[in-house]
Length: 130
Image (cartoon, rainbow, N blue to C red; front, side, top):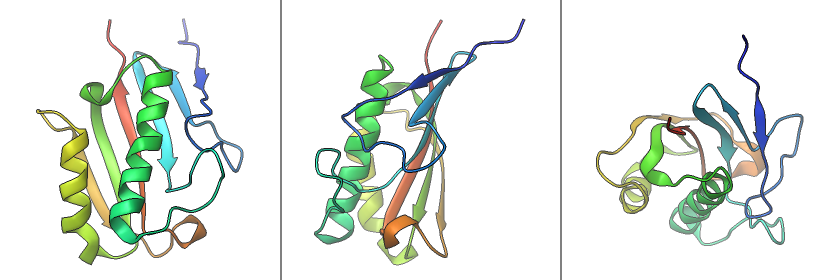
């Protein structure tokens, strides 16, 4: 029997700006769409460079996790998209403050272009538990 898909939506993160869900629960996992540094209340782009943008992205993802009833300790995989790989050390430092040990598996790539010309976007997969 097929596992039903359950969309996750929260006002604590920016709403989808296209035909996708903020996240989907499926087969014991949560698959969260990429978050960019938009303030969920105003919809405006977070200013202040890579540090402020990385914090906003991770706060947005935290809101999605919370809506799904879990937290960062259940994240098993992330993908970090950077506009400039030179920002990797700064993002890595901020990233480490959100994820407890053991840190999730991760890929980090420099993207040719990100939505709204942001500096960082992150998506994730989390384990929902038994």
